[in-house]
Image (spheres, one colour):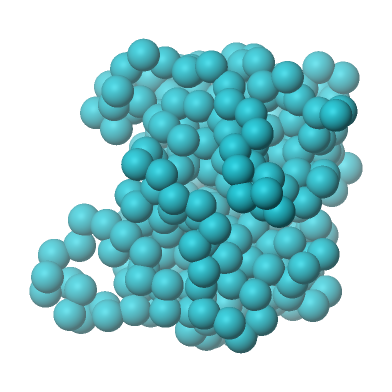
Length: 296
């Protein structure tokens, strides 16, 4: 197991809890969020990060839509946002009345549905769940009994979904049924080492291999489609959070990170915590699926 490439410093984002990077190939823009600040930001070319959206709530997951706009979560709701008009165009109902609950990570399936995980920041046992949203923004419960739902991604064929439960230190795979957007036959693909923190965001390459960010583990782990560990890439920060493929040929892995919960001494030792990094990869990534916008 060798480390063939090393991460490069991409942007001094200095997010408190950077997450959910999304590459828009149409505009060459990297979008990402700061959960704690309730912000969506964007980097285009060599320009500094610019704020796209800001609110007083926790933004937890982000994806592109088929019309080139954004779909994301605020606390316990799903939001559609028009980038050109700079305005919210639709909101889902609240998924929970509990203030400690919020949506965490998410992504779009090949059919254009938005799938996201509801978590409890108070960490009540077995309270995590996966929900699906179509164009009508009506919630569809997919899976319950999780501890801390996190990264989610699909295979190239769209027949397999991968998802993370951070507390269980587990990456699962399940059969994905396209016609109704449900998962079946869930099974463990890999359990990450206990000494390497917890698995967080994931990304899948064209060979079916999976990259996972290890929060509090200071590394990226690269697993084969069969769940074998191929590579451990050391990061210059202890809390990498999520990743996506982007840039030319989708041959670069962009990695967000967090300063959240770090002590003043840790921040002095890791001044790049909260920044964004890039990693050249030998096997390109899959193009991200987009949310199917409702008809006008």
